[in-house]
Amino acid sequence: MILPLILYRSLRQHALPSLVAIASIALASGLLMAVWAVKEQAQESFVNTTTTFDAVLGARGSKLQLVLNSIFHLEASPGNLPESDYLMIKRHPAVKTAIPIAVGDNYHGWRIVGTIDELFTGVDLGQGRHYVLEPGGRLFAADRKEAVVGAFAAKRTGLKVGDTFHPFHGLVFDPRQQHADLYTVTGILGTTNTPADRVIWIPLEGLQTMSGHDPRLAHDVSAVLIQLRAPSAGFLLDLMYNRQGDRLTFAYPVGAIIADFFSKIDWFDRVLALVAYLVAVVAAASVLAGIYASMSARRRDLAILRALGARRRTVFGAVLAEAAFIGALGSAAGYAVYAVLFTGVAAVIRSQTGVVLTLGAWHSILWAGPVGMILLCSIGGLVPAFKAYRLPVAETLAPTS
Amino acid sequence: MLAIRNLRKSYASPEAGRSLVIDIAGFSLGAGEQRALRGESGTGKTTFLHLVAGILAADSGTIEIDGVDIAALTESRRDRVRAGKIGVIFQAFNLLQGYTVLENVLLGMSFGPGGAGRGRARHLLDRVGLSHRLDHFPNQLSTGQQQRVAVARALANGPRLVLADEPTGNLDGRNAGEALALITDTCREAHAALLLVSHDERVLGQFGTVRDFSEINGACR
Image 1 (cartoon, rainbow over the protein chains, first blue to last red):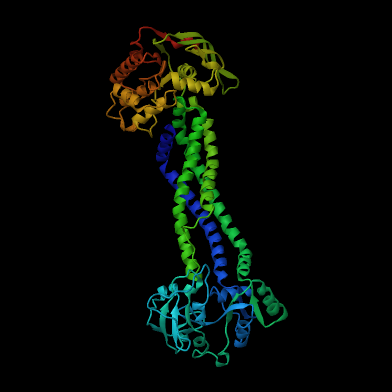
Image 2 (image 1 turned 45 degrees about the vertical axis):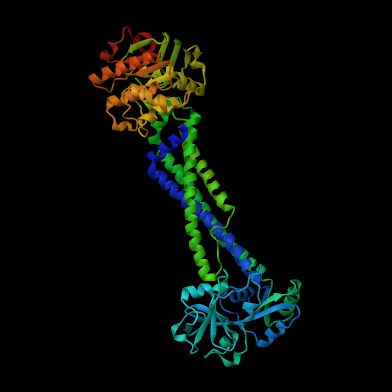
């Protein structure tokens, strides 16, 4: 009963240094949790996003670039491939679904991708999910200048069913690069929490024959998204395109390519984690410094407590408990910092990639981080606690007479 | 209830060697007895009271309180004896400035075997006339009121022995008289022995028998 009173009064007496320490701990704990959770969830989400398609066929080049461009709608396309290659792999007995896409245009920076309606009607997004159109919309007709807009892109551009727009050439918005073609929005896709939400979809032929595009490339595609009948077939196609051929790239398995990408940028995660750890140590040191600096002001109080019968271990425990309590309060506030940081980073990732990170998802760091901070603060409290333990009561209380 | 024999205490001297400050061959105090010791500043009165309270460890000798030689105990056990049997009133009051009046008294009883009890703390503060100041902080009280809080706190653990070190040293004449009366009366009511040290003749005059501290402390001679 008395320990909470001592803690409460001590925190009130030294409110400013305590608040500074709590804020430091909150920042450190929140940063640690956010870095960890974003890293884990982003990696998991990116890998899961790729599970819709088993492989991507594209022009000769980097597999990672091909996957990022065709599935995540990032980076530039490594090049085009002739329609014949698309038709050949489409007819391959090991291929269940082959969806061609063509890229190269945008609408105010939002990528326009040409494809076929089978993407929306025949592709399983996983766990039985398919693309769904918002009420009042319909898919584009293959031979018309019509568009279906991803949910996120529709929200940001304000496009709705019935609106018309001119595409712009290139992947980066340049007002001077406007195409003469006028497209009409026929549907808005429901949210899929995938990169497809950021795309404006038009018929494949529309993009291929857009005014200003080279008519000699009118039948080329940028990539072919592939679902296989059996995973083992992927290795045969990999052998056929990548080892025996030298014209095309067969990116397979897509999940492994993304996982490999993350392993290559693992150093970046490590740097972020190191920064978070350093912030945590500095925060714990601020607890030590705060309590230690206030020890001269506390000496008399602690000596009085000793004179009233408090044992050495009692004052030691009181100082240590105060450090741990500051750590606990800071860690609790750290959840708010975590929520703000995570939400901010998730918003950036979503706007840049379409991948959705969920704030409510559980990660082991959400308990390990705060517990670690409390332990670190307790360790930081050991020094002033030991000083309190060794306090000379009689000398501190009064001059002798 | 208090019996002291061959008590010695020395400090390291700045000039090298050790300086003997306490050398008491014998001293005793009966249960419920009230006694005053006269002593000027620098004669070791506070050191003596700190030894009896168990705050300081003696170099040699015995300090028996209710038959228990606290000079032979470890610091932790001395703390326990102090928390349960001894109340101390300091010249500077030594109230905890960040705690309310009620909390100061609660802390006075919280380390003893009975623990803290708000009812008893309120009763004690009512007895010293501060029932209307429970939630005040010491710096919101007059000097005389602070002394009364110190008295209530010293009695909070139901002590067998109260040690008062220049308890009126910071008070004016009127307040000093009232404070002394309060200390002696409340100790009597609580059946606690009182050992008071002072150099204030107005205080010492209130006690029947007063001994010079220099008479019992050989180190002063």
